[in-house]
Length: 165
Image (tube, rainbow, N blue to C red):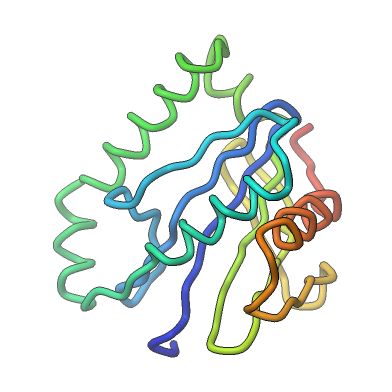
């Protein structure tokens, strides 16, 4: 993995956008040390893109040893459960199923010269998969505006598929 590789995930359940930073330590993980971003469905492309760029900038690389320590501590799993409960409470969902059932997700990666938006297939309540060539990724210059990035991520989300909805 390149040192300048940055990653984020953008989820959308037809009501809210949820943006998280993805970091790496031999394996990718949701980085709970980074700020989370939530936006209503009518958020502007400008604001959506701004939040995605912030999440990408927060992406970091840690040593595999640090990742294993973090993973085995249970912190990632515990924080994930807390984050889900927070979203359920904040947005008035009855449970995790109601929050996640219609959720589409895109990976967003930034390298030294480009941004790639990768649609996914929602294959279980909290499970997503992406097979190279299965979806048409969107490629942008790393210098796009917030508005262009927000619009491109919306397009990427429209390309997602689901066996859960």
